Length: 369
Image (tube, rainbow, N blue to C red; front, side, top):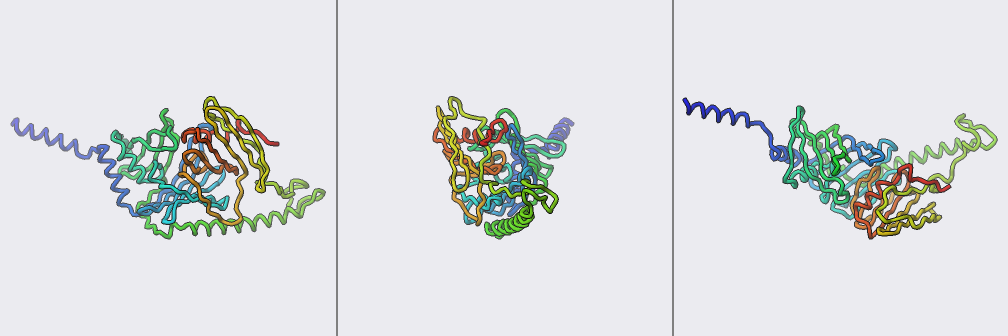
């Protein structure tokens, strides 16, 4: 009798243990899903918490084995679009409203965590010996460390899955447990049947050129309507009068404001501010001196008449509302119709990111007029 009782207890223990997913099992299941996918398409939203403001993007991610990527990000506030494209020719960040593509010399995305790329999520989990699993009513949560070399404040992430280990949401936290990045997947297609032709730079260029031609036609029509107005007459469109109808020829030429960083390293101060007139418009040069010397250049972002490819150094990195090029001692990016260039051999990468992220706060904007 005792023998049968021991056997029954052992069987019960075995049965209760079955189906209980461990962290290793969960990572393995997710890894298998990703590795078995020859191509995938994800869509959803991404939020960047910039402390003073939250920036929200619509997000589309396309992947084709082994090294084809296309990430489309559209700012939901100002409709500013940027596309990260990687194919056999290289890595590009296309900025349609400037009619430009920036070509990077980088091994992205293998060199850092990326909340919107599935294999990067897998690698983060595999590289963390203390990866943790939490079971919920609707699925699972895997917590793991992250690797953002250009933003050291980001320390760990939580990836939310359904019962089939399909990802639904990713949250990336800083050391104070504040979620700085949040990606929500609305659709996940692991059998997207994408082809190399879906990752051509030429297709993005053709699309942008067509959009630019349409914009030019609309602009010409608007200008023709505006030209029907004079200072003494009422515009025939009944939408404006006098000076309000005249075309502003200085649009995108004059830099209306100097934007100062809210964050400046300790024992460092603004030592000079200079505004220089160039053929393309105003350029502001801010020089900071002290323990951490650096220079910040601001100028109106100019749209190219013809699509151009500009080589840049560093890695693409998301800051607030733009994708920046980050190297060991410099950063360059475009935001709110302004091009920024930050350089300082005394600055660490995280300090550069902090300075760049603090720009644009209303309390640090001073009119040049």
